[in-house]
Image 1 (tube, rainbow, N blue to C red):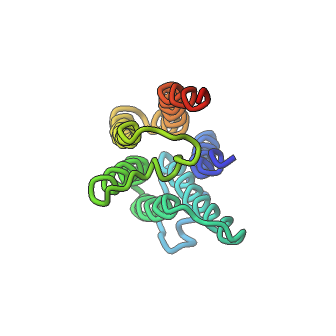
Image 2: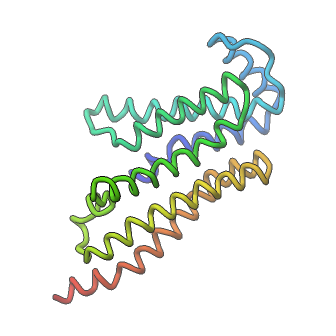
Length: 208
């Protein structure tokens, strides 16, 4: 359930974009009306409607995530706060300036922020954040914890670069599809490989 909760803005972004893409004239008119309502006037071009509406939906969805947790008096993860700041900043720039470049950079900035946090905590504070999060579920040698943390740093760095490659070498629609399906697919493959690598440690612990 948490996996779906974390993907909530991405899924709504994809659905909003797909729906708007099928009704370009209607989406452009709706986007124009919406932007006029927040003081950003001017007619929205037909080709801009889908990405602008999807961006607004993603911003609202992220706010909804935080609001839901706050209302239920649950802890809001630091990464979710970071995600909110990034989507408001880059998504807001896309809406106000009507330039999809900013929202296309959002996944990369988020992935690279995750990588920087994991690496910075390890190098500067000698704190392995991956170990902190999952050490109650599995016991590993210190060297394995180090490699595990570094593998997540490399993965997030790769994901950020892959997002930019798709954004600048393929169509907007292809990027939107990659943002959801490509991101989920690569994440699942990476987690599966990690699980297979760590399975022997689980087996060793079970045999003791």
